[in-house]
Length: 274
Image (cartoon, rainbow, N blue to C red; front, side, top):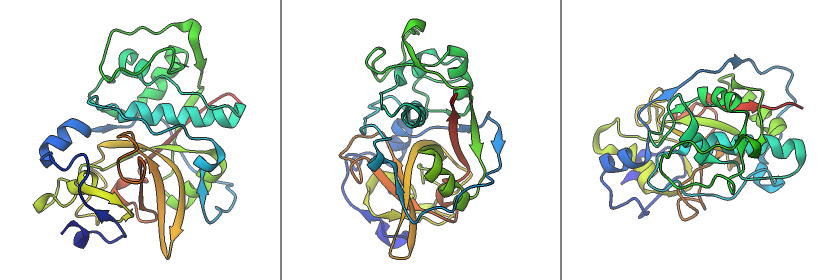
C-alpha cells in the first residue's frame, strides 16, 4: 500500500519499528522542532560535481550506531560531521563523543532531539569534543562529565549551506559529509503514509511528495555521506543512527534535486582550523 504513494523506488515491509503506532514511533524517535542559529553562506567557485560520490569509500565515515531510546540523532549528526572534517585534515578517523553533547550542551541537548545549529557554537565554547571511548554513549542525559584535558577535536565555527542541491553536491564532493535536517515524521497526511516511510521503509530511493512530506516540518537529523544516480533517479545517501539492521545497513537514499522532505534546507558543516 505504501509503495503506491512514493514517487521513487522505495521498498516497504516489516522493520523493527513495525509494531509501533505512528504516534509511538514519532514520540520515541523523532524530534519536535528544528532550530537554526548559524550563519548561512552562498556556495560559489565550486568545481563541477562528479557523477557520484561516496565518502564511506574514502574512509571518512564511521560505523553505523544506534541511539537507542534517547532521541539524540542531532548529536550523532553533528559529531559525524566533525569526525569527517577531522579525517580530511589528519587522515585519521576517531569517534567523537555524542554523550558529551547530550550532557553538556546548555542550549537544548539531552534526549529531546532538537536539531539546533547552535550546537556548533556550544562545541566552540566547550573547547571541542572528547573521543567517544573517553566519554562513552549511554543513551540518557547525565550530569556533564567533560574533561578539558581530553578534548581532541576543536572547531572554529560552522556554516549553513545555500539551499541549492546541485551546489550542495559539488560542495560535498570537495568537503566531505554534511549534517542535515529533514522531515522524517511523515505524519501530516491522512492514513499516515508519510510516517510509514521511516517506520516501514526498507530500501530504495524515497521520493515522497511535498504533500506527503512537508519540507517545512523538519524533525530529524542525518549525515549526508554521498550521492549518486540510479537509472535516471538522482539521490542522496544519508547515514542514520538506528542500527545496521535498519533500511540499507543503517543508511537510506532520498531523491536529490527537488528538496524532498526538506533535505536541502538545513545542510551544515563545521569549520576547523586548516
